[in-house]
Image 1 (cartoon, rainbow, N blue to C red):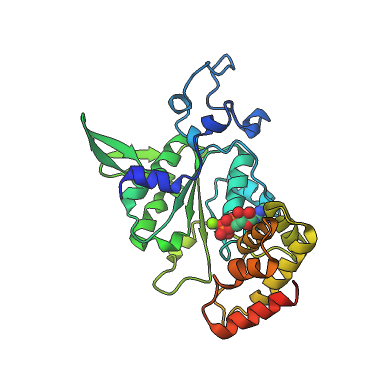
Image 2 (cartoon, helix red, strand yellow):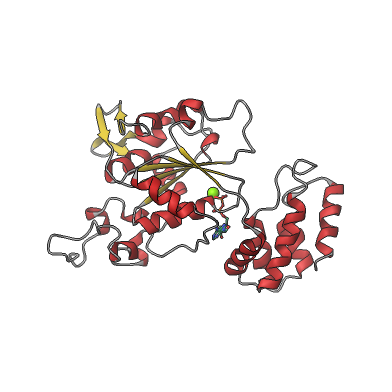
Length: 317
Ligand SMILES: Nc1ncnc2c1ncn2[C@@H]1O[C@H](COP(=O)(O)OP(=O)(O)O)[C@@H](O)[C@H]1O
Ligand SMILES: [Mg+2]
């Protein structure tokens, strides 16, 4: 996999300059220094973001919507101040990615997200030499980029990566805070703003696919679960545009399905799925059909389970 391909696939953000010409709101509020600002305090007109701020494309300039569920925002802020690497644990679709986007925005730090997979190599994270017309040039991978310039590097679904890939984060996630680039003969001493965050779904690991204790023990852990009833309905209503009453019904259906986890269902209906269902209803789709498409069909192929869930839906719509 070429690094260019890799960058495009793991960076969901369009260049910040395309959306917002100035420094981000958090920076404006004084939460973080604006890296593009010169000593006179002015941003040079027409200056390209990339020249002044190598992580400009990874800055989040608009506040992502995040509804705090408990004290996770305060805990994460304290962890960031201590530059403690953090592990976000919880089922898929419960808000882990949204949370880290929100925290990066709140802290005024760029966020480099890597969707981990088993084909990923250490070079995909660290970097490699590329051949071009002028010979070879080094290209930092996402981890090196974040460590060098001071970003938050979010390794999403870390257990999908092979263990020999995962160990490259070890020297960055203990007191050393270094990243040796063996092929280049350089050691990056991590920028003071740098932090590693990982996410994983504790339900999914087998013995073959789990983090080593030596990896786990480098992180602080925050548990994520589906939010409480009222809060989840608020999130679903906000994200899909449907009314609170319909959102509440969707949450009730999800709660019935979540009780079946381990009794025929591997995973319950996630907040993300409820937002999909709400979005279909908001677009005029009949609620029964919307729930079948967005909630029931994706999570089970078992005909009895489908019938059970479909009839749960009919009690609400
Ligand atoms: N606490 C929350 N505040 C705001 N939105 C949330 C929250 N929890 C979940 N969501 C919504 O659910 C969707 C799925 O969450 P996401 O962060 O992608 O899940 P995960 O990374 O845990 O798989 C998000 O896009 C967002 O719309
Ligand atoms: Mg995610």
